[in-house]
Image 1 (cartoon, protein in one colour):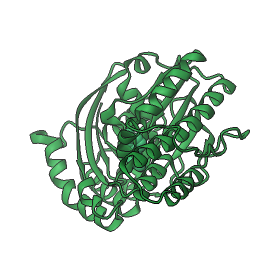
Image 2 (cartoon, protein in one colour):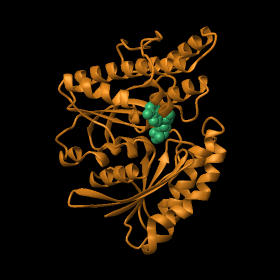
Image 3 (cartoon, protein in one colour):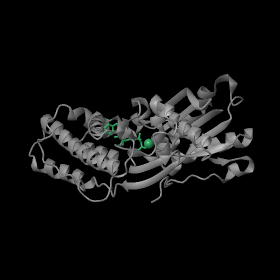
Image 4 (cartoon, helix red, strand yellow):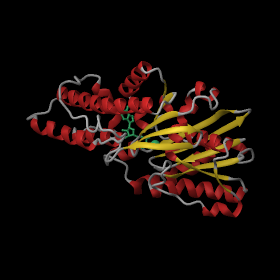
Length: 348
Ligand code: KG4
Ligand code: ZN
């Protein structure tokens, strides 16, 4: 089976082709057009600008991914239909619907968060080879819009055990960067500056670290960064690096502590990190160290699959199809697929 996947939920227009046979898959091609440079000057993603850019990028990208064979050898079309920005999602979904409708190929709706989770299968051969033997596993998704801890009992089978009550982790990184007049997206910059800073320099809170549930709250740490900045009369480069390091250390400590506790309580066999913030080395190192201590395997995606991409969407479609969990629209039903900007993959 060959799957063409389209992703346009935020500020990346992406497409991929993946082929599956004999219980395994092969990623043939994955391309991304990023809009980061355009949104940088606004200090964040502007939905109206993002959708216009998707409109500009989507057909050249389609031409590039399909090459001269066009759709002849594609069996399924997969598309991210939520969660994300409505006007961005609409571009990918409309193009996917049109392709499916005119070529009479089945259309598969994919949840963006599930795509992030499956970036682990895309990146780790061990996971692919383990078939179903590794379940249950604990999934930690940390992105610009989500922070979710879920138990995955099998392919496509999730139980949400915790989430953020305010800002997502990536959002907190971006907002803290903005407070210090750093560029967008702030996550990678804060992470890089942290390496030059002293994480003990500022005593920042660890909200909800010892709460009995598995929920998170990051807004308080962000506010504490603001107060620390206000107390400093003049902010020099060293202060900025120290604040970045202190902030990152606080976030990493809270996430790691709760994740490890959940892994023990739910007796999972492995911890799977994903989402844009899974590019963060401090978080990866801490989770790797602590999972080892409790004898749990730890997986994370290759750097190129941490941010939004269509290869992870194709991988999720492949596993959904292989496990009869795919949300398929065929024939005239294709018209029924709607975008759902708040699509909750995992219901409590
Ligand atoms: O998954 P993603 O590409 O988009 C969403 O689905 O939200 O995640 C983007 C988020 C941004 O907030 C960005 O600042 C953050 O991931 N991020 C990082 C790092 N790289 C990207 N945060 C912390 N450290 C990083 N190295
Ligand atoms: Zn994402």
